Image (cartoon, rainbow, N blue to C red; front, top):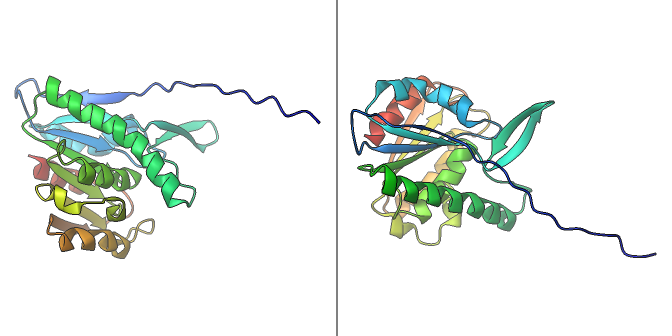
Length: 219
């Protein structure tokens, strides 16, 4: 039986972002905010609205690079694919890391922010921790909400000694339990990194209180 006709093809995904820059404050601190699995730049923007409307910060909310079906006829977005294999996970994360590093470099040139904070919720927090800890040359601060820092993927945690870190946990989070997040925080503390932790009476969601606290941390 002849071999099957296998054809390779390339596809292009349009990557969108929401960018909000306060015209009254040139060089304002910038927050690059990463949504969770199945969300979009617009849905995450709604969660962040209380912090955005307070003013004083620039915001860049990119859309995840991987479209995914959340439920019938509804498309959300993801930052990486996880099939249980850690090597595959890291390779998938590396794709998003390259994209986010490009965004940060572009922001440094065009917006000239006084600092850049990488904020991530859930899947965005897992990815964001990996990106910020491995590219401390691009990011000044990291906020991880309802996601475990992926410390085991970072070869030299000490290189991120100047990175300021805020970890937000939800007491009623059944998706990513606080004790699981703490397992990712412990190696950071052991490496001497500056980690602030705050807990909230909340489920698996970035609440208005969390958003406001993250914005205050980013200033």
